[in-house]
Length: 382
Image 1 (cartoon, rainbow, N blue to C red):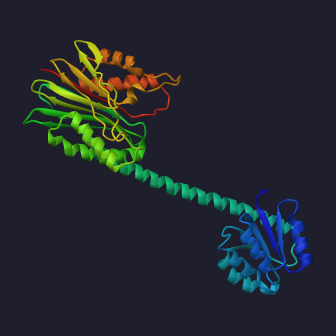
Image 2: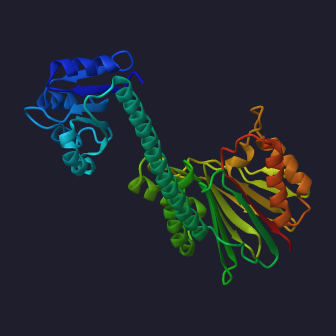
């Protein structure tokens, strides 16, 4: 408790010396022979924990001194030394200046020391309770903010995959924290037979990533109806992000546009892992790269043509899948994911994506999950 200073105040030198001797071997002590001098010390030292003041002093009463110290040291323990004739006055003033105790003269040093130590303990408990209340309020506010972010994310992520004649589609999504930074969306136009699929990974995690992703998803939804190629959509979204947001925020995105009538389509990538094509039991990567959106002004994006034949399957993932690490620091990596895809490729897609995630989870074991995992699969049945 050496950092806690005791201030003693009395206009009689003998009493002041007696007060100082009471505490000197246990606490740092400041001594003042007047209320004015005591107030100067109060303003100079912010770690005064106890003020022991005589009630009757020439320049101001002890009560006045303690009352004026409230604005500077609101949590200090305050003790008044008084004669019998002052008791009625003190009782009226106790509530107005937070007097912890009053002691009637002549006071006994051991009693005063015990009173001070009880006051310090009460002060410590009050401070701990105050910190606990603040922390509780902070956590309740954070919980509410997380719930709002979860609601936003539930709103922007599609509740289910569309029913596609001749095709099968499924998605598995697991945030690393209460709120994730991965996102996905899709749009199907029955009139043209066109399916558009987007999967993305927002920089950062939790609430900021979710809110950033919500704004981005709104822009994507507005582009679904414009019949633009994936490369043009990524360029347009990149331009919007550069214009509106800071460089520290970016989004990795891959975009697929597919004609379900003949299985032909285009795919563009902006910083996401390569997609996996499963054909006749063989798993390969479609190598198309690109810069994440929101990083470089004027970025252009390459686009590949593809065609899904009957039985073909396309799998899009976020990097939380292959970057998952176990307790030994090993990454799940692309080769393990390819093996898992091959192992489960004959299953219904809803089972396949779940089993792929479970393979990743089993590999990670008890290691801390550091990134969101999203796995989206599309298979042509006819």
